[in-house]
Length: 236
Image (tube, rainbow, N blue to C red):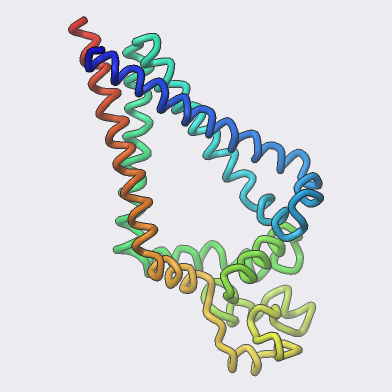
């Protein structure tokens, strides 16, 4: 078996796995959107709510993986230069986007926080406790991450929730403090979700870095193989 044939077979198998994995994620995401009650009965309320929150994310990631898997698999199988260069281009765009996101996350953390405060905080103040979707998202986030608001409890000052409940969300205080008034929230000093997420990422920096490096290696390998097959077709 020559090098071209070996890489062609590996390309087909690799992208077939991507296609099937993407199809699975896409199917699960659509299932949750269409029939979320099934997840409630199978996984229980908490897990079901978490699945509902990420359903559209699963659909988006699944769709991208299905397209990538299809282009890579069919491009290698049919030896189509058009499909191979499309596969290469999409992976390259994803790779560049990941590098750009990593640079922004490392260099412009404060800028990212400012952007989030300008976009997320108004929604939190006006819709938390009013919109079921926004309330559910923030309740799950604050419960799982052990945080309060985007920056801290002061994000709820002047909010719809504080005006209608005369108290801060219970996540902003310790369980023994009820009701969660301003004095209790100030005393507890529960960290904001943005800083808490950054802290959790830093604690698991080795794992996050390893996963990111592994993904980058796979993307570089996929681009290298697809370009090799693309260029080799000219010499066949």
